[in-house]
Length: 225
Ligand SMILES: CCCCCCCC(=O)SCCNC(=O)CCNC(=O)[C@H](O)C(C)(C)COP(=O)(O)OP(=O)(O)OC[C@H]1O[C@@H](n2cnc3c(N)ncnc32)[C@H](O)[C@@H]1OP(=O)(O)O
Image (cartoon, rainbow, N blue to C red):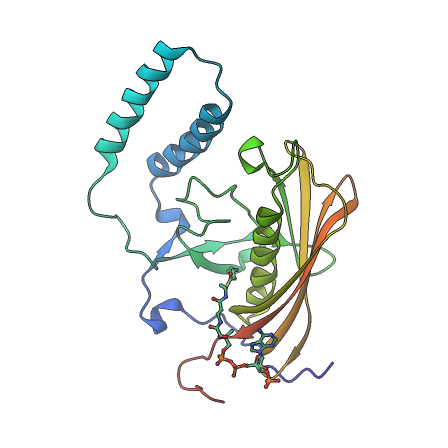
């Protein structure tokens, strides 16, 4: 495949696009531990065996906590978070990204590191709140995980972009509450198109795999190049 896209030596800085950026290390530990607690709360609510009185008391506590937390957002929608990954690799994502956002309690969250064999690799375990068919991960979530891993693979090669086309094949059922491995890599480039591939494995067997065409974002000053 032609390799004529232009990987950039350094990732473009989102501030050059008018986006706010916060370093992951700048997020207060009190906030990230609250997010972890809410993740655990969502799971507890989904599977609780508490009786009516306990449920009412818990509802009141949650309502009180929500009232305490409301108010203007700390960071505007669109704020990017800068992660420093292994080996110093810089990765940007949205702060509340549904799959990987550190302040989004609905995110698993997915953390992709550089794989020794090239590309990216992550381990994730999805609890019962990610359920689709009985005991199995929802197919839409598997697509979301693949999409994130595919986009991050392009970003890791200095070619961040938007998903233009995503293909997903579900090969085997993907179980809940067990370690899953996610891998992704760039397979080729052509003009602004970045071709990427990713897999989700359980026990070494591929349960879902995806390919995508990412369209690389224009860098400032090279629109239409
Ligand atoms: C760490 C961060 C990880 C983030 C992971 C999450 C990724 C996401 O979920 S992104 C969100 C979902 N995607 C979107 O919202 C994108 C919506 N689509 C768009 O904005 C536009 O269609 C966009 C930007 C993809 C392409 O538009 P534009 O910049 O005008 O490009 P355009 O000139 O039409 O096409 C560029 C090339 O891509 C190709 N292309 C465009 N669309 C497609 C498509 N759907 N399928 C295949 N190829 C396509 C074109 O044919 C063209 O190829 P060539 O160089 O051979 O002529």
